[in-house]
Amino acid sequence: MDVRKQALAGFALTIVLIRFYDCGAMYLCVCKAVSERTARRAIREQGVVSLRELTRTHGIGTCCGKCVPAARALLEEELAASTPLAAPPLPLSAGAVAV
Ligand code: FES
Image (cartoon, rainbow, N blue to C red):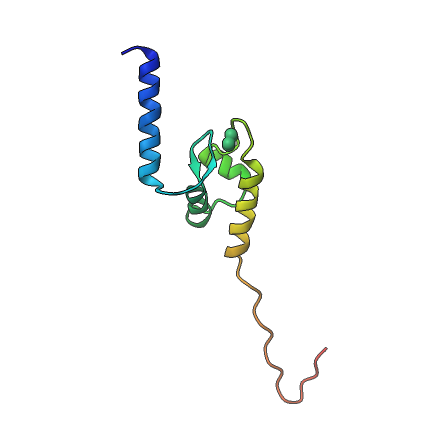
């Protein structure tokens, strides 16, 4: 098998594996074949908190860079969703003065 056919076979196998593991998921980074689902999972379950970490762990943005704005937006969205809301104010007891 010549080199070109091997490359095509490798590419086809990669696509099949990606589709198997990320059925129906949208690609966040096409160059590195990282789906939005994979990136969300990294943020939620692996404790990724910055674009730099997402880049280091998954290669997002290391090729053409077109995915960086979307990756940044996804990261902000996930981090905002995971941040606990501020606790509601405690009720004032009788005789207490609100400041
Ligand atoms: S789409 Fe992510 S580096 Fe090209």
